[in-house]
Length: 285
Image (cartoon, rainbow, N blue to C red; front, side, top):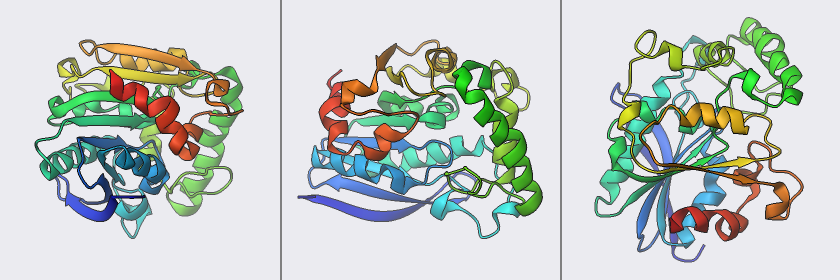
């Protein structure tokens, strides 16, 4: 990584939760990029992408949501972390990155749930462009039919057992993500059984947000073998941002010279392929 630096950082949220992150940067960056993770993905998952983008002249912030990775409490089972709290974490990360270099344009890469809460994020107007990668709602009815057995197993067998046995979602029995706080899982499960995901809870259980104020362009990448972020579930997310210019790009694994992308493989294994076949495209427009 020639001329690329990395430093681990800590920064507080508005409600005083201390988050851990890494800034991976070119010596002379020309843009800032915030990476918002998917559910259960610790920040190290995105280190390869961040390093490549830094080599191309970016300052990149990857971070752990509260309850995930190094931002988790000692006793995750006793935490009262809510899924919507991750919007506060995104707000804090956005503010922190912006303060690092206020003169640079700020762009945003959102993976999966990382694209759900933009309408709750404070100062989202600072974002110049959004790249959504495999962003679709969790509603199981919008997923590929082949994913239904795995969804029901996760929600009602593995999830219920893990909550009863350990008090949180432990990485066992097929769950390959990080440990999840109990209320994060319960809310995720509730939303994923509703056709409109969290939208019916706006201004009720959830604050109203300011989704109509999001005007930064969104380019959304959907992959044909992703069982979760399908054309239908992607559309259900994008409709939440009525005033943002939107473009959806559909890709096959063969477009990247691989057999599988699924919901996460592009960001997990992309490395330099990400820049050659994916990253350059979203920065050009």
